[in-house]
Length: 370
Ligand SMILES: *Cc1c(COP(=O)(O)O)cnc(C)c1O
Image (tube, rainbow, N blue to C red; front, side, top):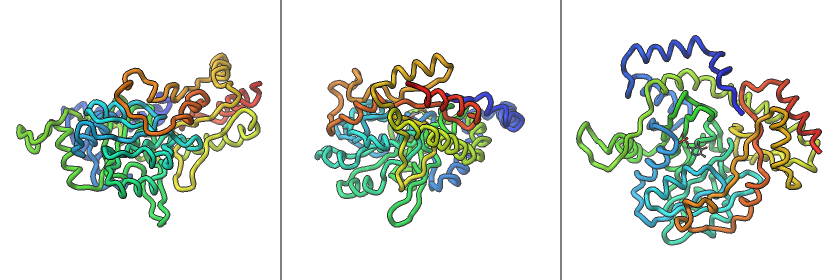
């Protein structure tokens, strides 16, 4: 699905130099590279404040902790997503409220969201799935009308740009009260281990999140809040500093691959539905996800595997069917579209190193599949 070794080889000298600088410095925690990365990421995203942390799941948890929610408060999330957001919500004794997704975009269905609100609803976590922003203008409107916090799960869509009806353009992760990023190696901007960050334009929230990520300390050994220990390693920050300048090129390559897939697979509308883009958002193609028709998804995956093409099912099980969440969630809407996607969605290899020959081989197999 990805080719991280080739990506490294292309910048080996630069990367080795950055890594060995950290190793030689001895500043393994909160070293200079961490501070540099914070300002580099602020410049790239346009966020006023960047709080680095240990991973994307922690980022979601820290944001929720900083919002001062009370046990029993409800948080709306899409039903078709990675488990991290629901987990952070439930760990804080808040109630995840899964809402169905729009089958065209895989993102939360804003119309169904409206019907999911209750007096206990305090926040929404839109997940920008697969590389495209959730429809943030109506989400912000619902949030404002109902005094809800908005935390964006932007683990998959760094660099995606949302255009408001006013023409105002903002990067994914900088639109809500806070945005959570992950630098897991396979994300569009990945380090060589775990890493994460929070983005916000709210100074108070930034201060609180920074404290929470550092044991709730306002200064050393003065703990004003109950926090956690969540740091981005200096080594990972140094790696991210090398890779961030390439992010737009990576995104462009992914878009090119997606376009090639689209152009080829349009010839088989009987079997494939190609991913749709909304006009309001750019797509950075963290995943290229097809909907396979005629109940043939699993057989197709087997056929590809036999021909040495990897593919992934994101996600095979909807949140509301996860055993750990039984009795923990409150179902927010009818969830029929999620159920269908769990049976039809198939993600193909997409990464900046995928070459034309490989794309040709993959699309050839897909076009000839009976
Ligand atoms: C990867 C991912 C996360 C979690 O990130 P980690 O850094 O692995 O903790 C959260 N949400 C979504 C949608 C993700 O894809």
